[in-house]
Image 1 (cartoon, helix red, strand yellow):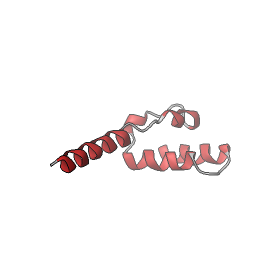
Image 2 (spheres, one colour):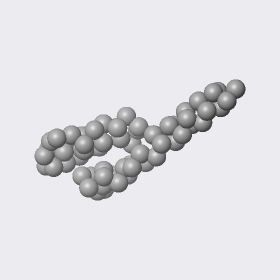
Image 3 (tube, helix red, strand yellow):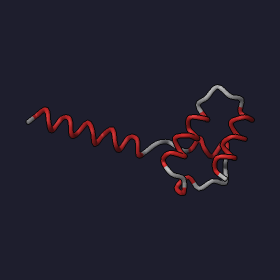
Image 4 (cartoon, helix red, strand yellow):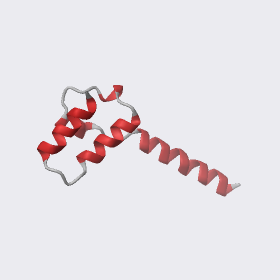
Length: 68
């Protein structure tokens, strides 16, 4: 029973952490984008681009193309 409660608590914590992704870095590359209108997949793709090894200009161009 304790294992079930612990597993449930961990699952809920992991879910809430993924739902609270810090999207403030998106503003650096696409300042006029309302992040709340993006899907989770779009946000994850954009964050992957931001954390990639590309140059800032490449990141900005790709992110702006993705949000159009």
